[in-house]
Image (cartoon, rainbow, N blue to C red):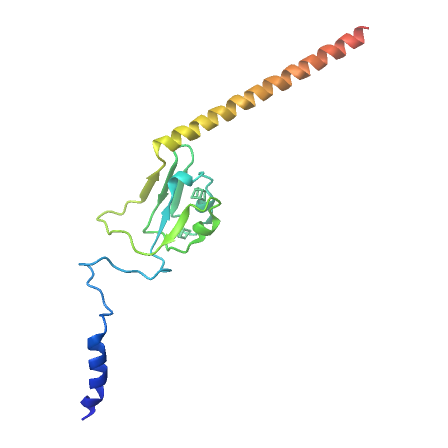
Length: 154
Ligand code: SF4
Ligand code: SF4
């Protein structure tokens, strides 16, 4: 007779959509704030290394000159410290896990050639301006010294 108590619940559930998904035949749905993996918008990274210093596991490597950023996902615990410390806000905690692989290789990211070329151009421009400023200051100092010497002779 106790079985009869479940009949209303069973009938109600028959009219509801299923609460489960057909993964892996359908894409997995992750809760919005779940900590799946860290992602980067590499073209916005300035290579400052703040993320590497914040990481308690030493899971990150940054090479400013080469424009590269690496993460060892086997070491990363998705604590999010690197995301908090990034001054350019180009790191993110994403829901969802990475595709499993057969080898323990770090994930490697490199800036696009266009961005690298633009940054190189900026560096050259800054170096040219610094050289110009230095030459100007030297010329001014030399002129001041010449004037001082001339005053002494008079
Ligand atoms: S999320 Fe935490 S463990 Fe993972 S790379 Fe960032 S700081 Fe390191
Ligand atoms: S903290 Fe942000 S900007 Fe700095 S190296 Fe890391 S990812 Fe790049």
